[in-house]
Length: 212
Image 1 (cartoon, rainbow, N blue to C red):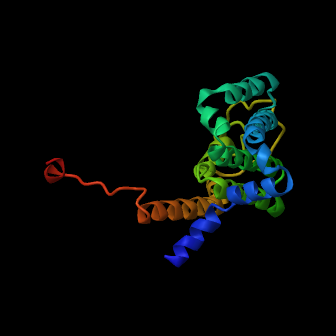
Image 2 (tube, rainbow, N blue to C red):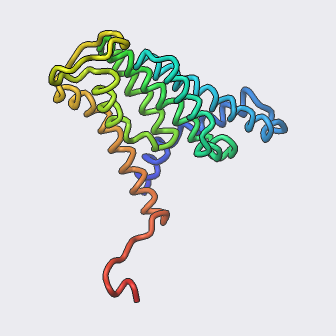
Image 3 (cartoon, rainbow, N blue to C red):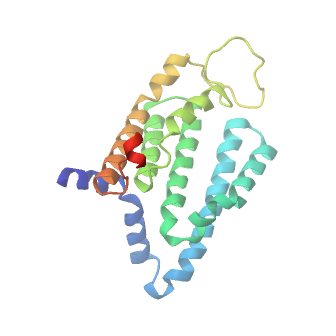
């Protein structure tokens, strides 16, 4: 139990740490409620701008990138994350997830250990805020196919807009994601075991006897 508690604390430490530092150095307690709502909107707007920058870097398309970023900014799915202070972890996790995408775009343009570590660090911070970006390694593999066009495949007319990037085999692209997959697996296991241990996930019963 002590080891599990420590693992959960470490895996979810970013949001509480952010709020503590924020209240200590930026905000007085009496200003908290109103200013937190305003800052959540500002943070969400920053995320939308970051999404635009990531899409623009990957595709070279200004108009389509701006359209997708605008949809992200106004989509009702994000209302609770922005309006509720308790959901600041969603906004924070999204920010680091988008930074991981931005770092990966730089890595794809010129692979290096330092740039890969930047991807892994941003991804780890995203998981520490909230474990909702666990599928990022699979998303990166899809991005390798398009729009990054890093994966070698049968001759197809390539999009001339994106800058040229080093082409790798599909196996190499998968191998690159293994450290990130390990981070996803660790975060998922810790989250699941903790929720099951503390009664958040109820055991499911199947069969005729369970219906009676």
